[in-house]
Image 1 (cartoon, rainbow, N blue to C red):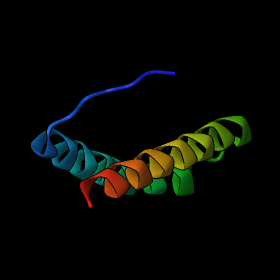
Image 2: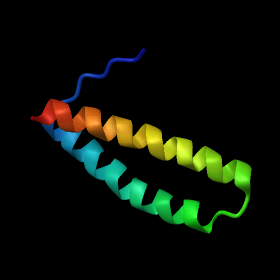
Image 3: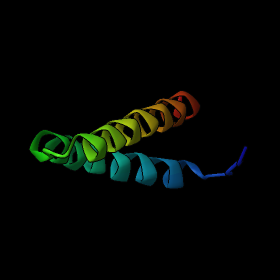
Length: 60
């Protein structure tokens, strides 16, 4: 397991970047016809959502 120490600014910046990437990723998933690659992208989406939840919990 990796532990990162982020300032509030770092966490906010990372959260914004991941949120923007997540939006692009959803469009990519919708446009992907290859089943294996689509599944890989969906798994990446789940991971990003988990990270965003962790960032949100620590910002409060």
